[in-house]
Every structure is written in C-alpha cells, then in structure tokens.
Length: 76
Image (cartoon, rainbow, N blue to C red):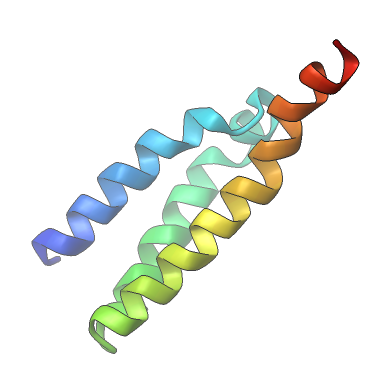
C-alpha cells in the first residue's frame, strides 16, 4: 500500500476517538476496515478517488460527532 494510503489510515484511526464510545466500541474495527478498503479501491482512481473517500469520512465525522459535543453546550 502506498505511503498516502497508509498515512490516511493512520490519521483516520486517530479520528475515531472523536466518535461516541458506544459507536466506537461496537463498530470501530469495522469502520477502520471499511475505510481501508474504500481507500484501496479509490486509490486506483488517484488523488480524486482518495479525496472522495476523505470527504465522506469528514462528513460522517462532523455529522455524527458534532451533535455529541454540541448537545451539552445547548443544555448549559
């Protein structure tokens, strides 16, 4: 696997603690595996494929993580 793909997987793994514990506990390994597989497939398309996978990952992180951290502020 290329350096870019390995680095992407490393960064994604470091992003996982942002997700809620129960989500990470139940699906963390599967999330990592799916991300790696998507990157490997997208890597055949080059930078545009890899950036597409990252856009999706960032969108998921923001849409799932955002409410987790915003809710306590709203209650305060």
